[in-house]
Image (tube, rainbow over all chains, first blue to last red; front, side, top):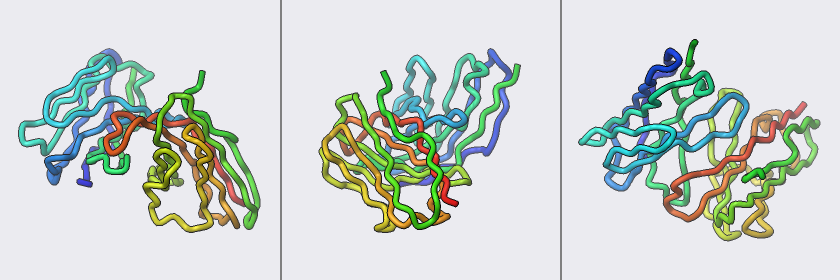
Length: 110
Length: 114
C-alpha cells in the first residue's frame, strides 16, 4: 500500500474550517484514500473515504486532486470536540488491511 | 448499545504470565481485527479474521494466538508476556473484504506488563 505524508500538527480556531492535507504521490489506481481520527484514549473513528471523486458526509468533506497524488480533509466548522489525531490512509483494502501512519494532531482552540 | 466491546479495559500483569482479551461485536459484521498501539502511538494491524478464518497475520510472535469461536467474537490470548507487549490493543470489525468501507473500533484494552 502507498505511503502518506501529513503535517505532524495543526491548529484551528473554533468555528472555522479545518483543512488537513495529505500527500500520497505513489498511490495506485485501485487504492482508496481513507480518513480516520483518534480522540485521546478512544478507539479510532472512521470519517470518510474516496477513490477519485470528492466525497461529503455529515462529518467532513474529502477533496482528492485530479492526479490523486494528494487530498484534503475539510471539517467545515471545527469544534473543540474535533481535537484529535487525524490519519490519512491509502489502501486497496486487500484483506481489510489499513496501515496507520503518524497522523496530524489537530488542536481546535477557542 | 456498544457496537464493538472489549474486556478488560485495563490489564496489569507480571512478565511471564498468560492473559486474554475478549472482543465482541453486535454489528453483524463478518470480519474482525486486532490492532496494537504502542507507546509511540503507532497503530499496527496484527490479525484479521473473515468468517472465523484467519486472513491476515502480520508476523506477530506465536505467543499471540487469536481465536474466533464465531463471527461475532475474536479473542486474543497472549502467552509468556514480555515487557514489550505493553500497549493498547484495539479490536475492530467491518463488513466485507477486501474493501472495508469502514472499520468500527472498540475502546481499547490497555495492557501493562511489569
